[in-house]
Amino acid sequence: MAGDTPWDPLVSHLLRTTRLDRHEAEKVIAETLAYFSEPLPEFVARRHRELRADGERNEAIYRRIATEVRDRRFSASPLSERQIRRLIYG
Image 1 (cartoon, helix red, strand yellow):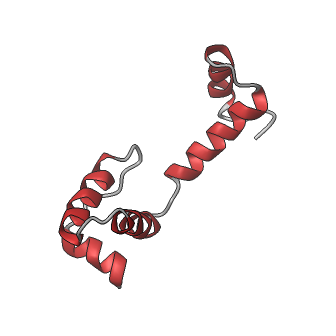
Image 2 (cartoon, one colour; image 1 turned 180 degrees about the horizontal axis):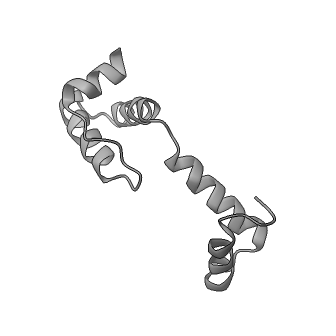
């Protein structure tokens, strides 16, 4: 990410407002972009696994995933419970 990138103004902002060095700021940006680039099916499957591991039941998980998908910064279209189940189980 070094050099002239569309993210240089953000790197500069992070350098001014945090204690991060340039390499750390670029890494934070790269990790954030990767987080928000996760395809919808992978996001739904990952969140289902995480929430099941926390002991939540599917009915609550479906509602929570639907809310999380709607509220993501780069959100997809809202999902119904049926669509969420199909993404998880095929």
